[in-house]
Length: 306
Image (spheres, rainbow, N blue to C red):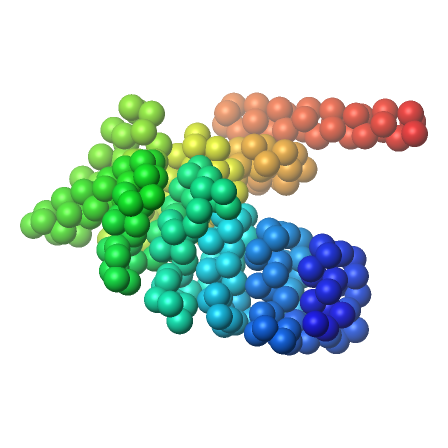
């Protein structure tokens, strides 16, 4: 192992940064063929993973266990899966044993990955374009069924149903998008946020430039407790329609859920500048400002006690 690899293995983020700043190769593998990013993915160290990627670590570097995405998925590290996908990791690359990241997480033992974390990873991978019907030799649905992953099975069946309905709809792309959007709204009203996300995701494939879809999906992610994904959709909404206040409101709400109050204030203030008469935006801003002040005062009290 290189000194960099040892630092990653021990979770020494400051030391990792020091070695990288001094020119250590982030892609240098150990004797078993694993790169530092594989190890960061395995232990789930978000800070170190981001450091390695910022210094040129290859997101799809290979090993006998696949890419870092395989390793993160098979160990149920959904936060690392999200980071790797943000850096355009390939969700369909196969290991020498013909496992994709999706089949890897579904094949993990319950002792390593519980179903809740498995479902999080699976949703992230499918959203990023993972082939959920591919047989290698078993399909993800067959693997999930065999392993008794009932929530994962339900999600895969729901996706298949939505896609099948969309494919058999003979209308134009605009008509199909409208129907999917309608189904998404109905699912949302019924509290089925996972189902609504599926409908909105399919609609995006027909019209990836519709900012409303990203806004709606952001809200669904937020209601599902996936604040980081809600933030990503809010940012995409703003990119597509920067003059629309809704994107900034969604972004601010996501930051609030992440307890990033200063960033929330900035987002709500940007929306207020676009629509100074919006009571909703102004109230949200003052709520974020109050939370930021409380956090600051709590920090001061701790410091004074110390």
